[in-house]
Length: 436
Image (cartoon, rainbow, N blue to C red; front, side, top):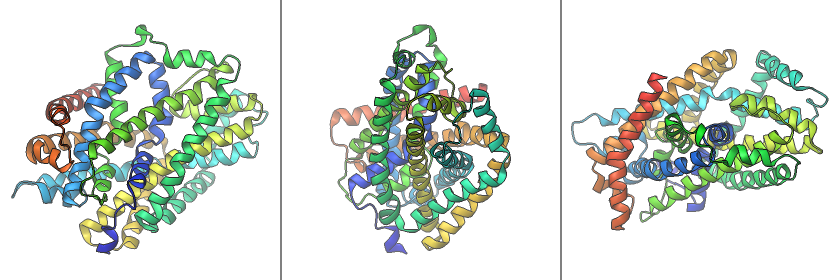
């Protein structure tokens, strides 16, 4: 078991695809386009990029360095690096809880997307008007057998992939899924931009509308960057411990991952809004946009059944790559903490997913509450701990050495960001979430 746990990634490309798969989940496809369009378009994108540079990349580098240096996951990683007699390792349980909760309560999303692949491919939505599409989604949420069938497929696929280990399962699948997702997004973008009236979608996404940009837009950019990268959600620390090359430049890797997230968010907007505006459909956020608004557009466009199916397959690739990456991180953590076999750790992980996921399916109100608690509080607290631990407890010089950062300019930039900018930014997000 110990040999299996320490086997690590087969290649840096596999590591990057797995990390990008974890990060480029439903956050980029589901939330970023609408948040961008309603918060100043190009102004939001510029702010988002600045936030990624000042908060996202430094904090991701810090979190990954903890696992990379210790060669352990979460709780055990903190134990290896914390000052003697301190209890910083308890923070590992915060990361574990956040990762596990996110992987479990989001079960309805995976069920929806799987069901929508089938429904779109078989022409279920053909002939429906906007009201009927909305009603069909409401009916789906109270159709427990169908929802549980979709969830069971997601749980089964997750168990199969993760049971095959890091290299043979998660890394192998992500190396196929993430490039495939990129191709699907480009195809959908080309199709959308060829539609009459699609330019209005580009205006919605990219116009630098200062009237829409407020202080809340800045906090929205902070929150979006924070959650898109997945800080404090366990996986980055765990996968950092699985990088075999001791000389790996973690800042370079984290920069590649972060740039990929920015591109994925912009591509998602280019994929969705030209189609949406071409058919004069009201843009909305989250569930309404992806599962209620867009089927109407696919009904109206030539070849819509194929385009819609392709879109939801891409959506599933994004969601599933994130899910299996989180599950692999949880399994690795349980193996590291308790010396369990992969089979036992996976069984416990999936059992937890089934219990919490079933609660989400039965009550979307509880789904919303778990989302608020996990993302607005649990993850934020975990990220703040990472910033303080890396910058002040373990020590910023130790962190920079562990990450193999040698450039004086890069070291100075990371010192300022990790020790000062990141804690302040996290505090702003936390206070904003608490007040709202």
